[in-house]
Picture 1: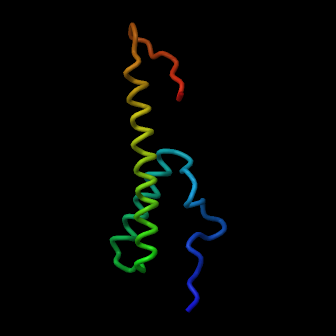
Picture 2: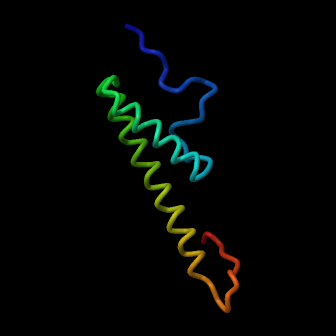
Picture 3: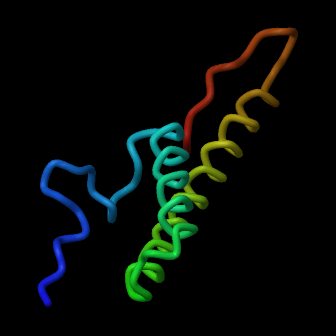
Length: 84
């Protein structure tokens, strides 16, 4: 039995980083829905779990970066922040 490719050519790359926090959350929501459907083969389930872990880490890092930026308040003004 030939299985269709996991990622159609017009779909975003599932291996690379998401374009944004919002894109990561949307992809996570899709993964969770697919995993909860119990219709996914075991290998795909494991791949989805791994991708979800990457997306979750990305989201946590973005949230931490934003939180750190908000904490850089001085005299009521937000200082310029860099991701170094």
